[in-house]
Length: 201
Image (cartoon, rainbow, N blue to C red):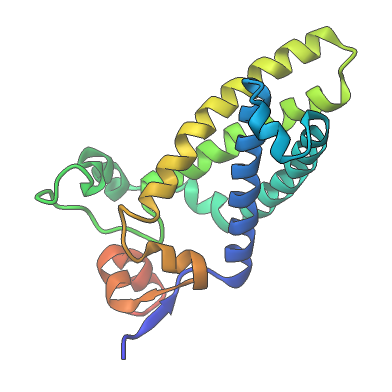
C-alpha cells in the first residue's frame, strides 16, 4: 500500500475551489463584457443579469482571496539560494537533464504565481468596486477601466498556465487539489526540505 501524506488541508481545498471557480466564471463573464459577446450574455440571461452575477462572483473571489492569505502569503514571501537556483534551471521544465535543487512545500514558481494573483487580484477587486459604485465619477471610472482590463489580461494568461502546470505538466498534482494527499515517496523527491522540516524523511 502506498504511504500518503497530507499536503493541503480541507479548508485549503475548498477555498481553492471557490477561488478557482469564481475566477474562471469572472474571466468568462468579463470576456463577454469586454468584447460584447452576445452568446456569453445569453447564457446568463442577458447582459444585465450577467452584470449582477459578475458583481457577486467578484465578492466571492475577494473573500476567497483574502482567506487564502493565511495559507500561502508568508511562505510565498520567503526565498533562499535553492529558490534562486531553481530559477536558473527553470525548475527543470525545459530540460530533464538539469539538476533541480531541493524544494520546500512550494517551489518559487508557485510562490511568484500566488503573489501575482494577490497583486492583480486585489487590483481587479478594487477597480471593480470603482466600476460598481462610482459610475458618476468619470476619473474613477476611467482609472478603474484601465486597471480592471490590464489585470484581466494578466490573469487570463496566468491562470490557464497555472492550470496546465497543475495538471498535465505534473501528473499527480490534481490529486492534491481533490483530496489534499500525495504519495510520501513523491513528496520526498519533490519537496525534500518540507518533508525534512516536518520530520518525515
